[in-house]
Length: 57
Image (cartoon, rainbow, N blue to C red; front, side, top):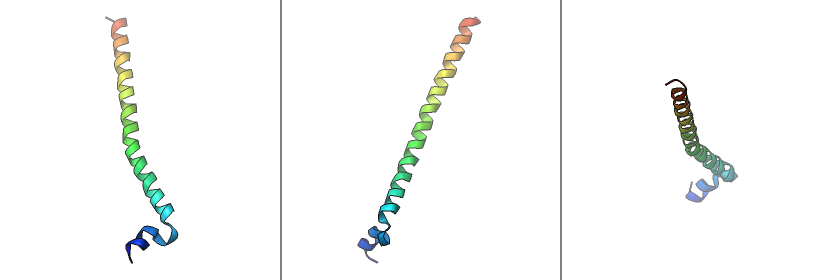
């Protein structure tokens, strides 16, 4: 087997490399999206606490 055959993968190279690419992209995007949601939830909780403290001094 030479490098050309490896990269071609018996005619399935487009499917295989596209699958690897999409998987890598999703594995990078997921923690970023979860982190953003976590920050938003923490901001909402902080805002609710401030509102509750203002109502009940």
